Image (cartoon, rainbow, N blue to C red):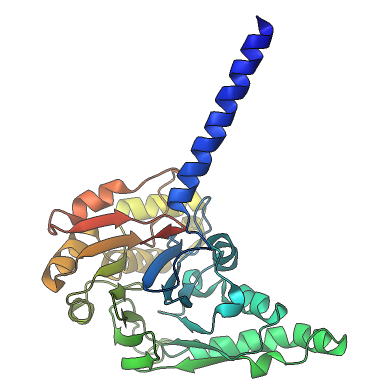
Length: 335
């Protein structure tokens, strides 16, 4: 009898393993995916500077005819690229929406891994003002490792000859055989006169046009007519989402220990930033409806206190004003 029980347990275990493997194959992209057409992979879907279990910070890969273009590089991007089967040595162009740490915190690690392969072709990081300065700082950091590897004979090309950053304006900022990229300034930044960033830094949204799809990346933004116009007729609107009232935002900060470390002035500014410079679901729905987009992909998800939160309630709220398809992204989902 015991022998039959053990045999039954073994059979059930094998079936569970097969089932788990099948589910994973449906949610994670395959390295053997087709080399033609346009694919979106949401590499990291967590918004905000505090790390979260189960989600890397903001990053996306748009793969056009087999060529990867990276949009934002939050912490965890290098591991997610590896998990997605995207060869880091194939990455030559990276776009940054704005210089907040949850969109740039993984850039140094990505460039470091790229250099260690070694990658000898030029890699360009494009974005709003501040991008070139950020990349220069990272190249200065990488130069130490670069000098060591050149000296021990394992590398020949120094980091400063591979990596460069470029500040762009708005309008068409990039074009090659696969894609045309346009940028607009959105409403994520409102700096008071006299502050260190006033008139200096900007936040962008991007439109990627390929032969078969138009994909919009909102970056971080509040309600924005420029973004709505940019998104006209798009196949995918990949948008940030925030669903925190002032009370919820404060509770989140208390939970992470940040609230007590802020001055009263910083606390007030944080609540204002959360209310005015991010998008709520109803606002996303109105924007998507006016722009006539086909599908909305929600990302840059806030911490909720529940690591297993599906955030599906956000999709329902977007659909109050938008009749199209709304999907809540997870890390390594493909669209």
